[in-house]
Length: 319
Image 1 (cartoon, helix red, strand yellow):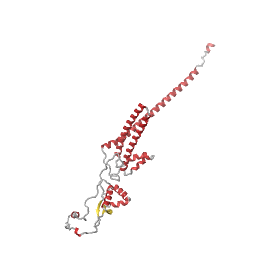
Image 2: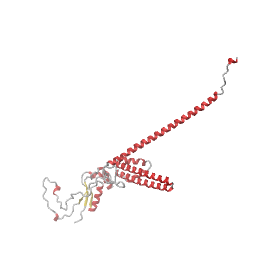
Image 3: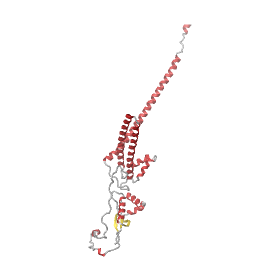
């Protein structure tokens, strides 16, 4: 007998947690086709996505389809050769019984009764220090808050130690070592921050290379807010299953950004008000001093003019 060939069939079923829109987009990208052509595959009828495959090739195609969220399966093609010695007579079908219940499972011509392929995980595994995986908006804010707090602590400690060393030794070596240490710390925190941003881009279904938009003038000042505002894909995309639900710690850490923004806004308002008050006081003092000088200058000529005044003459006495 010739080698058994296999087909990849699909009847519109999806893996758990995958929405139809995401599955259509993933399938269109996999087959390099447009979404309108892919929508015909979701009519509910069984269609063969790939035919006449070996078992190894069929397994490879099935794994690729499962990664895109498609619940496809492998079916063997019916053989064209028939060996009458292998034919087994089955009892006639009785009324009221499902046709599948009378199929002989030993027959080599029976269709497979089990799903082939490993189901996709419901949630992805969190990888904080990696460029792989996905994180949502709140987890992105929470992880960034932890990174910011750690950076403030490390930078503050390193600055105080470096300043103490410089004041004690007053050497150029202290400045050089402190500068190199600060550069290494800054590069390390920037590297981890880029990893968080790339995972957030994956959650949106976007390529991680879009992080380079942060380096574009004007766009770089707006792009981080886009990452914090847009919701991610609800189901699996080409970067894997969705991230797990947010924990209480993630929610608390992400809410700290609101507190930090409010405190920074109040501090800025207080500084602005203090500057306006000081400027007003200084201008008032200057105007007051100017008015005093004007009064003194006007009083001196008046006194000088009063000195040469002649005494009054009593005309009656002269007469």
